Image (tube, rainbow, N blue to C red; front, side, top):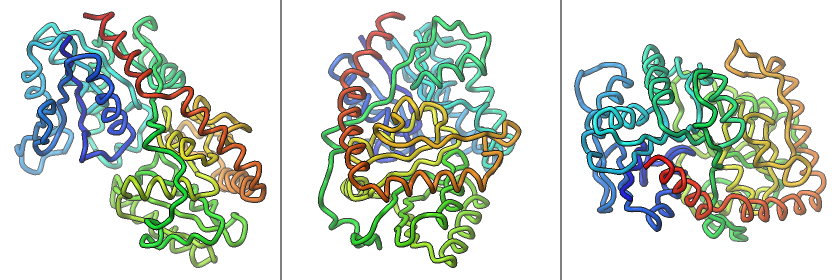
Length: 393
């Protein structure tokens, strides 16, 4: 079987969970099928990867137009494949065009849904409407859909009620528990300005509204005195959110919070050491279909405190591998908490619970490592995806 995996992201250009997913999934799928990856950007050295540059014209146009412009090139390049498999709206349209052009079955993995990310309009302006169009067209036309969590499946059927539920299968994201494992070293942390002599809460995320990072900053003044908060945050969606984050970070530092802001991308070794060293990992997302970074923290033996939203409760078992923080979302404000200060205080309280009880935190860390290894292995996930391919070919 010849399969084409379509993704905006592919190493070395990986900035989010979908890119991590495609990278790991492709490694395992190559054991099962003749796989070719089609991605965006500069040429890659691997013979099984074809990169497509975004068109330079029209100059100065909305970026979403350039994304749509690469779809015909990808669709033309996948002629002769038995199945195409697209990831995120950036390549969903390419998968749909390939189906129309070649009659190739189209499998679509839903990592998130554009209708549930209204803050993207702040980044894309009218391009957000184009992203909605691309996703909707591809979702309703795909032969099979994969949701990365049961919550994601529910969202798919709610956002697209015309969709046949029998076409949607849940296959969770995964984790490489050999690459992500407890690492007692700290040599890569000191150059980043991270102290290794104090209780530490860590957070690693892109600077986008859905990750709830401003809420974690608002929670910071309520953390137990002496706590170091390490936020590895880069790649802001917009200049506006970057400015908001910077201003709020200055405010909490002025209140005495020990905040370390790491802007540069972490090496794999530094990420593993940070996730292993931290007493608690924080995930304050207001929208999260699953959350691979929580699995990475769990695989490194660290308990997670996370918002009880989306697919997170399918990963973090409340009271066993971490603690979940309830959220009363404002549906008219992109899922942001209706009571932002109350949410921040509650989040800090859950973090403080584990900071104050190290033995309980260690038990949760061990349980998280076990859960990650038992339930979220990439070979098992690739086998499930392969069965989806076989069902449509």
